[in-house]
Length: 130
Image 1 (tube, rainbow, N blue to C red):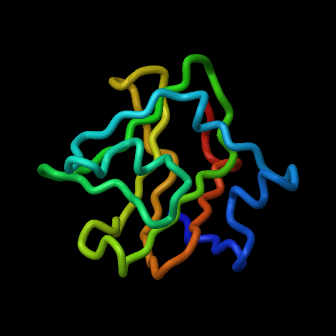
Image 2: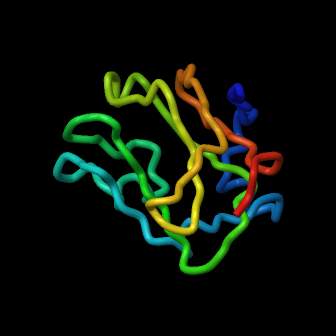
Image 3: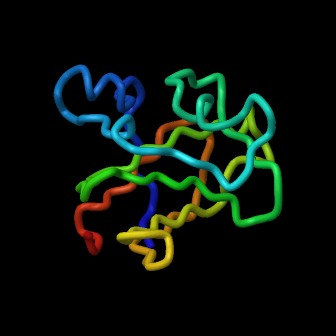
């Protein structure tokens, strides 16, 4: 289990990408959700607008599935959460699982969330990699 690595104010992933510090690779993947409320799906999850968000609609666990077309190294996972905006929909635990297909996923990281209104970074470099 890891603890959150808080990005300093003003150092959100988009700013870090503009400086060449990080590279966003989510656009290279196919994203799907276990459920969502109308108007709160993948598009809102990925739209770079901190005012919009994904809201699940169904039984737990609530899943975000990110499938890359080829083997891809992911070093850091960045998640923004704002409890004031999405309240009970804010996750309390995030599990990162990897595999070659949906049936052989293995958990490599587990994050207990203590979100306020901030970016959370999860380092995946020391995790087992596919």
